[in-house]
Figure 1: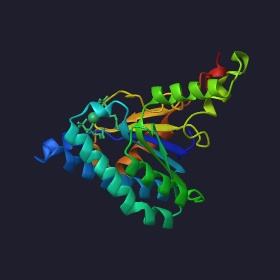
Figure 2 (figure 1 turned 135 degrees about the horizontal axis):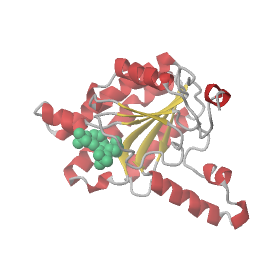
Figure 3 (figure 1 turned 30 degrees about the vertical axis):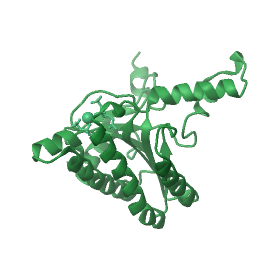
Figure 4 (figure 1 turned 135 degrees about the vertical axis):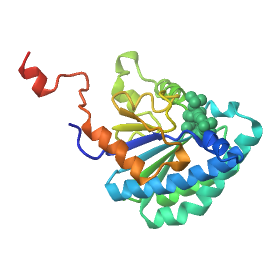
Length: 238
Ligand code: IPE
Ligand code: IPE
Ligand code: MG
């Protein structure tokens, strides 16, 4: 059995669009409700003793969405960071942002820098916001950094690459949750998620809360993690 509570959970927050359609509202309203779910889940993680939470907010592929939706999302991220930073800081949460910064607006980059700098010393938990994030882009960026550092081929190993990922200090995610019933990874934490347990929840992200999180953790706790090996009980009968 896995240890009961994952140290690090990653969430592919999916279903905002479907939620909005189902409620006869514009997609931007779905995204807005999605932010409320983030607050609930972050609080629940704190209560349950989950140390780190990585949330997939915007993928490197999401630029392909209609311009108006992208603009509404960016505005929402900016506004949310500005509004929530004080409370996050008071609660001792360290905020980090993962993704390619160059394509974000200067305004957004300033907000990110401010949030990261202000909360850098916090120890109660980590919120990793994956914004303009792609697992492939992250691996490409790590490879570039290896070359810039002048590493010889024989020195390129998993440790050297891991050290060049966006958040080398975070443990790998134990559990990756995807909401809205979709069974795919969509370019999230490709490197770090190599042995993550994946739980798919049918709940649309704006409806996700403590109860759904607890259910996902319970499913995680019932799994046998093998990491390519053979659990002791099986090995004994071979
Ligand atoms: C996830 O919800 C939020 C982002 C990708 C930013 P979606 O907007 O993908 O919701 P669906 O998949 O259309 O329902
Ligand atoms: C993944 O959801 C990206 C985020 C949650 C930010 P998408 O809705 O973009 O993924 P696909 O297109 O269904 O694979
Ligand atoms: Mg989606």
